[in-house]
Image 1 (cartoon, rainbow, N blue to C red):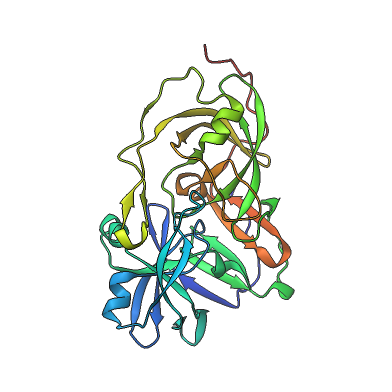
Image 2: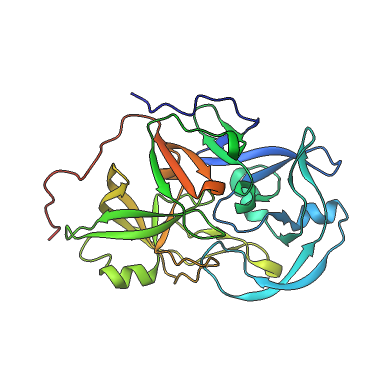
Length: 309
C-alpha cells in the first residue's frame, strides 16, 4: 500500500517531464517564452547555459567562482555571470539572479532537448516543495500552513546549500556504517561514494567491479562541458533510508575526493535511480525531508547477512 501524501492543496504546482528520473520543467526567462530547465538538487546555484545567454544577448561579467560540478570540486575558475533576469511562470518568480553561466551542451545532447539552464538548491529555499513522481509535478506549499499527514520517513536536513541526510549502509563484510549523503537529482547513479569514504570503510573490498559507463557529464567552465574520469561500480549489500531497506544497491566508487561546497561534509550522494523510487517532500524552512515510497518497500535490516568472501 502506498504511503499517503499530504492531504492539502498546494499554493501552486509546476508540472515536469520525468526523463528516466531526471526532472525537466518549462519556465519563462524574462519575456523569451517557455524554456526548458533541469531541476538539479546537487547544484548550489541556479545556472544559465552559455549558448542561451548568448542567444538572449545577456550582459555578462567575469568572477572567480567554484567550478560548478556539484559537491566534488574546490577549483576556483573564471566564470561568466549574468546579474539579472527573471525565471518565472504565470507571475510566479523562481529566480532573479545572479546566474553563473556554463556550457551545458553535453546535458542538452544527453536529454536531446535544448536546456536554458539548471534550477539548483535555491528552488527549495522559501517553500515546502514536494517532488511528486506519481503526478509528475513539483508542488509548493506555504511553510506556515503546511501540515504533513502521510506515513513517510522523516529525516533531519543538514547543510546550508545542499539537501544532506544521514543514511545507513550494510557493507559486503556485513559491517554497518552511517553515512551523510546529499540528494542529487542531476546524477544518474543510485549511490555514489567518494574516495575518502572508500578509504574510511575499506571499500570496495573484495567484490567484483565493472566499469561505470564512460564517466559523468559535468559543467567545466570556460572550456565547456567535460566528462569526469570513469569510475568503477559494484553493489553494496543494503542501503538504509530510515526504516526503508534497499538491498543490493548498485554503487559507484568514484575516482575523486569530495570537497563539499557546504558546511557539512558528505561521503557521497544519492542519484535518481534511488530517489525516483520515492515522492520527496523538502521542508527546508523546517529543516526536514520526507521520503514516501511509491510502491511497497522492505523495512528494517535485511535478514541474515553473509560476508562476501
